Amino acid sequence: MAEIVSLFGGDEPGGDWSRLIAVQDASAGLRAIVVLHSLARGPAFGGVRRVAYASERAGLADAKRLAESMSLKCALAGLPAGGGKTVIFDGPQLDREAGYAALGDVIQGLGGAYVCGPDVGTGEAELAALRRATSWVNPAQNDASRSTAAGVVSGLRGLLRVVFNDPSPAGRRCVIQGLGGVGSALAAALLSAGASVAGWDPDPSARARAKALGVELLDPAALVSEPCDVFMPCALGHTLTRELCERAPWRAVCGSANNQLADQGAAAALRQRGIAWAPDFVVNAGAVIEGVATTVGAGPQGDQSDVRDRVDHAIEAIADRCAQLLLRARAEDRCVSELAIEQARAALRGPVS
Image 1 (cartoon, rainbow, N blue to C red):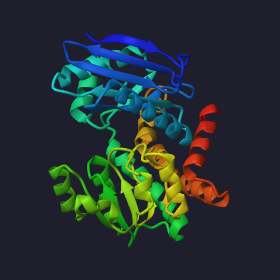
Image 2: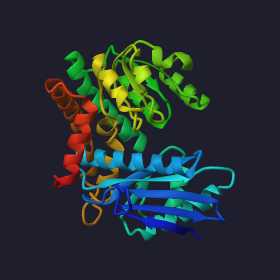
Image 3: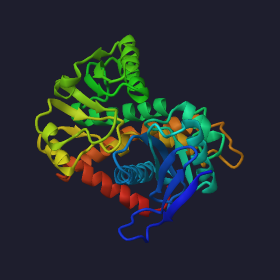
Image 4: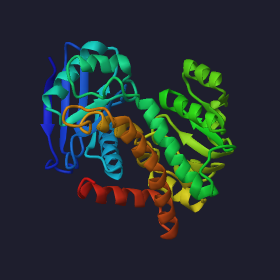
């Protein structure tokens, strides 16, 4: 049985979260941390990330960054939800099925304060193990990759409207870093819209699927130096370093990866060079929009009759939100990342729309 080894909240020195829960289950080889950043607008939503972190400190830092990003994402999208994240410390000691089931027991014990979902290392098999222990999981009928990709395409249309005065991806050169579930769904949507798509993924099966779609596979060493209209980070975060952004041959950046900026120097370099960046927590909100709509937003009896229409409408609204943010940043001569965070934090303090 999983044991909660520590639990504390935002009154902890330096705390900026509602709850932080450290979990372990020796019989399953499970070590995990659950971070709930904000419950002010509703339950915390966020995926379960399974990574072989170098240390507990590294895992905690990742969980806190990602949970806060989810809070900002939910607030900007006007959702009755906050942000959360779970990290599992992967390794040979972990019995995956038993570990996820033990984690599910802990999540169930939170009484709906946290709704978990997929992330790096957590796919349908792991979610199935969670569902055997808790009902507070992204519904099985949801397609997080598809909805996330749809949100990125919507945000891209808003970005293209500002940068090129034309929202259509047709004829645009897009380079995707990461061709997994979201990246491949994004590639398919862009190719269908008439874009030229290139990219890379370290997984041979992902590359094969992408190639079958019509994606041009690039040399991984040359991926970030490939001239393009839009560079699209769709793998792990911190891709955008200052050094890279000072020399990158891109017109714009728009992708699904969380926490894309390695530091604010990267944001400054993008701004100085006139490379438009669509903040990740603005454009990658599709999955949480779908998750909230199909759980807390589904109606008193879980009525799903109009959920799909509401999800599609909310995802389409990302285009205008992204365009307005970029236009305001341009008009006020401000860094778009700072403006986006400012707006999100204001929304986080305000009423649910």
